[in-house]
Structure formats: C-alpha cells, structure tokens
Length: 183
Image (tube, rainbow, N blue to C red; front, side):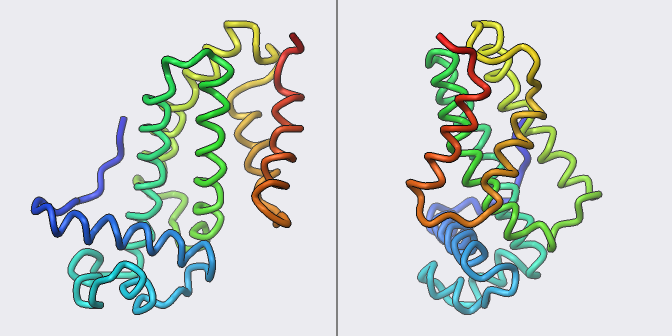
C-alpha cells in the first residue's frame, strides 16, 4: 500500500518536485522544521515560486517529505524481498534508520492523529512486517520479539546523536545481534 503524494505529470516538473523533496529532507534533518524555504529551493536548484507551486504551505512540504520517506521504505521492502530472510530484514532496517531521522526532524510538525499519518504507519507496517515474519519463520529472529518491538528498539537507538555513521551502524549492529537467533 503506497501512500500517495500529488506528483507533477511533466518530466521536468517531476524532477523539480523530487529535487525539492530531497533538499527539504536534508534541510529538515540539519535544521529542523524551521529550515528556510528559500534555502530548500536553492539546494534543489529551483526558484522559491517553484517550491510554492508544488507545496503551497510549509505543512504540505512536511507531509510530502514524510510520505516520500514511507514510500521509499515500501520500495526497499519490494526490492529486497528475494534476498535471504535475515539479509532482507537488515537491508530494510538500514533504510528504516534514515526514515527515523526524517521522522524525528518532522514529528513536531506532523499531526500524528491525521489520516495521512495513520495511512503512512499502515503502509510502513505492510512493507516491513512480512520481511520480519519471514526472518522469524526461517528461525533467524527470536520468536519472543514482535515487529513493533523491533521498530521501537531501532527507533530508540537511532534517536540519539552519534559521532558518525560508522558508530550508528555499529550500535545498530549490536542491537540486531540481540534480535537474531544465534547460528
């Protein structure tokens, strides 16, 4: 179940739209929800008018970035589904870590009771839970763990600041080792 964002039809307009989403994601991660819209447009290589044509309000931009992150999680789930169970789950979780960073930057701006937020949560579960269940059924993930347990663990671990990406990956690796059934 993909959650939709209204994307432009023309190829050049789609490129601008996608560039704005990527620039906004980076700007929000660096500066929070108060990131300058002018800076986002500049990072995307477009004018501020193009930003406002695509996202009339700051809230529209927040929601589009969030929805895009959830859709990327679903795309990763599809692309790794043929991998061995543990590899597929670990690959999806790697992308989930980036999603958590974006969500953390946007959480204050998102209405967690909105239909959009509920639809995104359902889409995320629909994408990742089958990977978790497949790894559990293959005997690679502890049977006393649930998908929700794993998401909360990873979200909690990645919510703190790390020295660098290598440290974040190491800490995440320690946690996943506790989730995995020993060989």
